[in-house]
Image 1 (cartoon, rainbow, N blue to C red):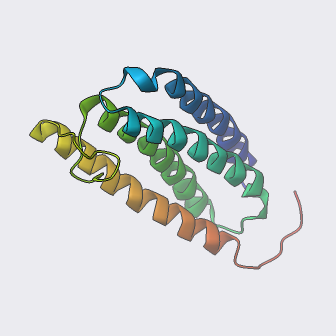
Image 2: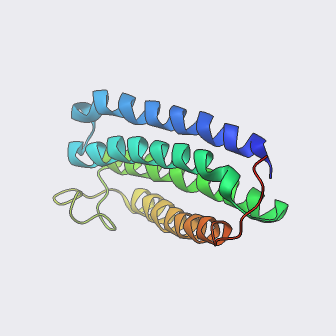
Length: 144
């Protein structure tokens, strides 16, 4: 088990939590403040997710390749979740965020960029959860 990944996840969890808090200060200045609030919450929640994953890391029973995939998918999904919602708030996009983006619309390239982020992070986070569940499938191993 690569414990360096666990420590790095903890570090990134605190950083992403901090970034979410910082976005909370600028929510009123964003083009779409409601989406800005979503970005604030995504930073805080995804930071917490990375902290939880880092703490659970020693309980995972995964190959080295699966650990690497889980680590990078988790980082990609969580940071892109925060960043994409922040871009959506700054751009005022709404195509794939009809509730938080109601009354706003961005340029075609802005909508496409946010759409790509939302779809790719969704795939990354579902994969992250499936890998973590697989790693927690019940096989015990001695603590290290």
